[in-house]
Image (cartoon, rainbow, N blue to C red; front, side, top):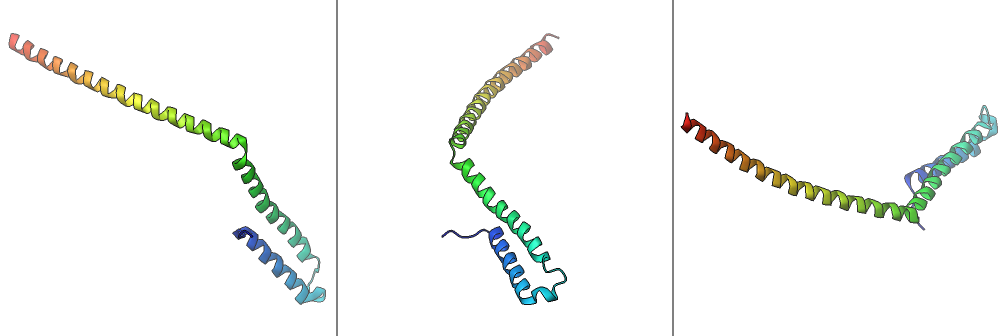
Length: 117
């Protein structure tokens, strides 16, 4: 048996409190004896749908072939992004070396021009 989630435990507690209140207080002490079931049933139905629906959806998404296909596509795109980043780094290094070479040539030209003046 698996452990219950917090929402499931809360729903069970709310239901138990409502049932105990209706039994202990009885219909004569309640101003409207049908208020508790009218509030409790939709509340419990909503909580039940919330807990079971999300589990079913999560299980369907994570166990399906479409999920695995999307995960593989994500991995492929991540690999492509890493490869592109590596190529960009290499090109940036090459451009940086060329700029340094051009800067050195420009400095040497400036020295020659100063000497000629």
